[in-house]
Amino acid sequence: MPRNKKRSAPPRGGGGSGAAAATAATAGGQQRNVQPFSDEDASIETMSHCSGYSDPSSFAEDGPEILDEEGTQEDLEYKLKGFIDLTLDKSAKTRQAALEGIKNALASKMLYEFILERRMTLTDSIERCLKKGKSDEQRAAAALASVLCVQLGPGIESEEVLKTLGPVLKKIICDGAASVQARQTCATCFGVCSFIATDDITELYSSLECLETVFTKSCLKEKDTRVAGSAGLQVSALLAWTLLLTVCPVSEVKKRLELHFHKLPSLLSSDDVNLRIAAGESLALLFELARGVESDFFYEDMESLTHTLRALATDGNKHRAKAEKRKQRSVFRDVLRAVEERDFPTETVKFGPERMYIDCWVKKHTYDTFKEILGSGMQYHLQSNEFLRNVFELGPPVMLDAATLKTMKISRFERHLYNSAAFKARTKARSKCRDKRADVGEFF
Image (cartoon, rainbow, N blue to C red):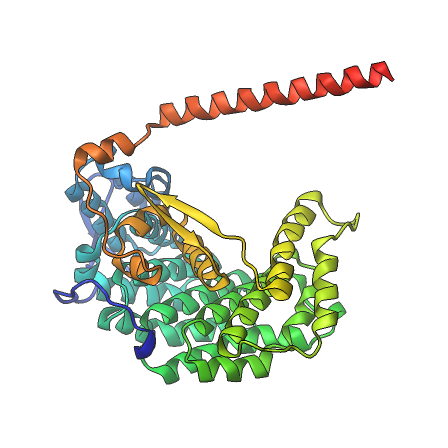
């Protein structure tokens, strides 16, 4: 993050450990030497090493309550140490599961001190998996890198992570022979890590240019030559580019708008609904930034743009799925209001005893980006992560005593009962409504 936009971070301390451990625990508790990467698939015995630790999916499912339900902080750290060791395993599936397990744990729990001591080991493992792994493993490594930077926040530690991984991520993003899915995840990771860790403004501009090479190419192609499979990559690159633009100096924002503003409307005609939506939301955000720079900002082709946006907001094409049309119409109604009336529908996000109001496109885009990275752990991080609280101007974390936290928690059984009751109520209401319509039909 540039100096003029840099936000405060939690106090730093400690140093990184050396290279990753050379041994990994087996399911039976014995130790064995971990061999370097190999193209050969591991045996069933190798795959069993993950069984000595928690299932990676359990972190995402249980969230921050894992400590209360399954053990102490020491138990969690022990499991994470095992996952870190397994990132060196010769089995690609084992390495991928270990990466996902670490990522899910970091997304659902603040482990700053634990990560700070092992950031060099983790960074080395991520770099190795990005360089030598296949598509799924690269995606898992890039996702972990994003959450790692979210945990560390802005500062020298995250700068070192980006300095090591940035060139590798750039290479994958620009490699046409690489997996599209891996390039897509790497583009999101590169944008998020640059947003958090970039301190040099020239590095920020270099990151923007890297992402521009991806989505501007699609803007220049004819519609019938666009490859459907690459739409996800274009979406990720465009959204990451837009995120970085929100922390650029005013002069650079103006320059980038002049270069690329007129290119984005062509993406509104894409066959991919997610690319159309990403282009529409990016346009709304760019209008917001442009009007922040010049209150009387005027777009030359405004009439044509509003006509396109209105068509998308009322799209009734039969060849598109109902869910797709419903999602598109909802988004483009808001985009049209932003472009024509400079209006934004305020949203409220509740987390614990607090609430946050999303009242502009910049804030919405930033929230959506980190929500995609953290998933169900977003609410926990909004409560506890000082970096995110600084980004959204929430102030210091609210300290709650154990009794208050206990009263706020709802057990799975209680959630199940609540959802069941709500479902029955909705079903009963719909049945009554149908009965009334039937009576009216018989009367006429």
